[in-house]
Image (cartoon, rainbow over all chains, first blue to last red; front, side):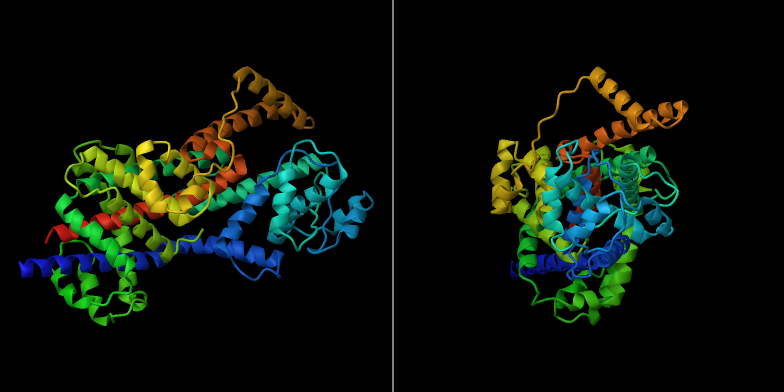
Length: 325
Length: 184
């Protein structure tokens, strides 16, 4: 009995450690595509507002959201480019139709900064025009929404590009289309295998397929987890939660030897690198062998997920096979 | 949203707590009940780990519509439950008549395309209706999506897809390790 008890204890500690380590190691692999996008966001943010020092991912999304409250109505005024923190009087002057053509001539070829200026400018413009003109749709929430996002920048104008109509409607259309296309680009990075597809409808199709397949995978995995032997599950789940909440582990690595003979992919490599590990939570991450392991595991995970689908006797989900491979 | 390891850790922790709370491992649950409980824990965990976004609020709202789930959710989320289960916007659907919609679309599109050639009108209307149909489908997929407009819907889809991916990876990881330990 005591041997079994120790065995059970070993098992849950192992399980807890494995889960913790796997989680920690998953971060580098999946962050890659996200990091680029975040960097783009970050650079863009830094360009626009050098005063904003803290990079907050939530702020990024929120600022994106604030751009989305963009409706069709627009004032009948030409748009101009101005530096970021220009004050309201300048904006008021610029609001008049005095130098549309000169400004247009000055506009440089389209760049990312221009685009971002355009977007920000569009938003700021709306706040100003809101105070001046009657608007077509109720977008008061946009100005308040925006105000809480950008308290420091008063005003940005949209630069009318050379050779294009300065009609406010077409400008609004263009900005809206650019925003949609930018989001489509991000989604393209996220959804695998979408770089070749152009066009909104096709991309939306792929996104829909991807989200549906992910949801089905969740269903399927929960079925598989439910099929796990309940006795083992009892040990694993209850003890694992205890194990995770009591980081860092104090009795780690003596028990890893028992995992040597596992058929599970990648655990052998994991075991070989266990000698490097020191009983300290942070050093989990530092083991480079583990990084490669989980790179492998992810690729394997993509491929081997097809097999459980066939072994499951209940609902076969053939669409998932397509999505996986 | 960044897929940080702390996010995943939070998710795993919450999910396992949810398993405990719903007593998944007890023998007297049927297979389907167990599966539903597992899915509930997983969804609640991912919504909790993500924090306050529209889709997470929509998800919790949808989950708490079933009375039985409420206890588990409350226990799992604690204080967050009240914050997350508030619907962020009105979730009523505007009853739309197809005829009126079509007429509106035609009028607005012809107004917009006053300057363009006539044959372009048909093409762009077609493209727009196609895109609109797909946006409607997407609205049904993303939790809480019906009350969002086009832009925020795309943002939320992005966020939701990333967290779904994290959820799938986390569940797969737990499955693999529990299977590995069961082989012993």
